[in-house]
Length: 191
Image 1: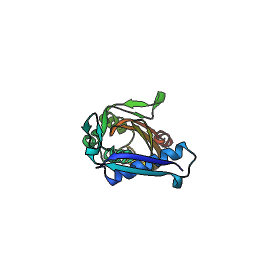
Image 2: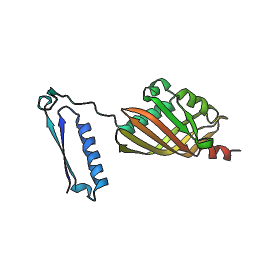
Image 3: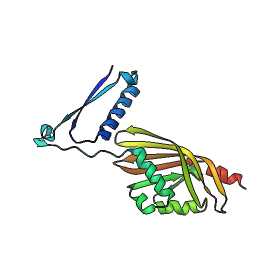
Image 4: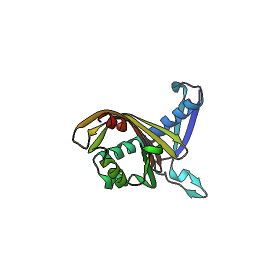
């Protein structure tokens, strides 16, 4: 029966403490053969004056945003073509890879994506089925699955086109987006 004890400086919100306990529980369950109800996580909170390093008292650090929520908000901003706000979610070295020949089409700006998409559809939106998160060091990977719906360039509609988006997030910013979907197959079927 694993027991995990964490010491935190007082001041983190309940939501952050719960998220940390859930992730620690998942890490233990994914590492040890232990059922979830046998894993105990306890937070011990201390006052900032009781937490010192290098003769200096410390304050709580910033919590990372919930990566899946960050990605979902970014995707909704993109659907609405609110590029100015969507750009604020991106790291300076952001890159996105969309389906294409020779392993995909790589872009580094949202304006390039809009231009790339203009020949494929008038607009597109997503029915999201799942949002999953995975953690490795300081990078959180978010996988989003679902179906696309929208309008072809000629004004006719499409629906139920599968997609998978994979995002890498670090320090609250999107670093990389990889997209897989069946849009090209659907386009070819129209001819």
